[in-house]
Length: 498
Image (cartoon, rainbow, N blue to C red; front, side):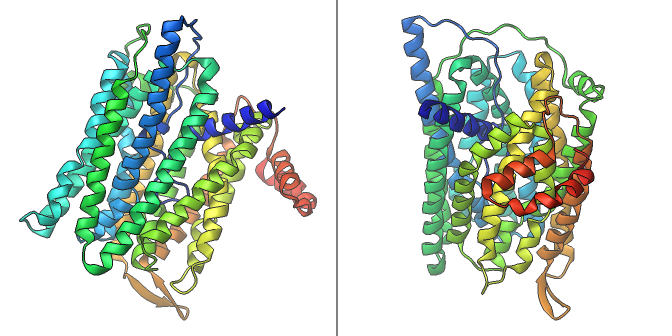
């Protein structure tokens, strides 16, 4: 029985490890580039003793590589990127652009899938991941560079853009490589174990980075602190590339070589996936209006410091892992579609939480970390399961790339435009006797957009659905003890039509 329970937990963790990532400024912590897709393989090859030892060495190296990748991410992305931007004098418009880059770069997913399909996955992954992690080295010279603030900011944006696009290409190749490397019988245990190590490494490093920034910034050493973190990110990136070299690449069959445009047309002609593509674009656009600005709001308007931002992320990570088992069972027993519907409507209210947060009243941030992370965990797991169910096995890489492109395009455009809008609105103004900021306008627009997108989720087709939203709410009520919601379920079921 204990073995079965452990397997269930690991399977749930694996689902989280393979979920679509949300920018780190949103209520769920960002996944590393190597966690944004789940490999799929139908082969279970027999292993000789020599091949078994080689496989174990590769898998152990993959776990260690993931941990160093998370150290890199904690020292070079998320709140640290926001810190660099603020240090270089960036405003809301630039923050919006930076937030748009990680998902906006997903438009490169289709060309990346096409490029990778005809080449060695390991070679492409090594070069692309290496570029994405090692290009941060020039940032070490920014604080002492003899150049104007605008020039420094442009150099910073160029480095981040190159790294982001390279990470998309590297992730596409890494997913295909791991799909060939990890046997079916080990996949759940492997990715579950890997995800745990990654979560621990990323959370501890994020807290350490926040403490360093909060200690050195007040005494005027912000540039030195950021340079130190960049140096640590560079070293972690070097180690991660070395560990990737220790992993072997098994032989694979030659795939059909079709162009990115052909793959896009193939997906768009599939009537089953059109509602999902529309939902992904609209949902990510609605999220993108606000997701890039939560950390910025905490640092500039709430004056929380980096440690509170990191603690919020750590709390989110804990809730995400704790809730994994429930959502994994829910998706398996009821289906991904009902979970997406339920979580979409629930996440609608997350941006409104920040209307109640002030410099003197920070406790609502904890509510965001708990309830927001719980709902995002379920949404990410269910959304990825739905992509797998909708994508035909033979064309799955291209379908997944198209899904990522739709979501990334929506998020990137919305985040960029939101930054421009925030720059046009007064940074602080009074309304109805209360003090507000331009970011509150973005939070409100995001909530409205999320509600409209949640309505689109009612049109999704889930080929594997075995239940409805009512059954999901019943399961959630039974698990949490809130049986009082039972009398309201018939009306809720009629609303969602599931």
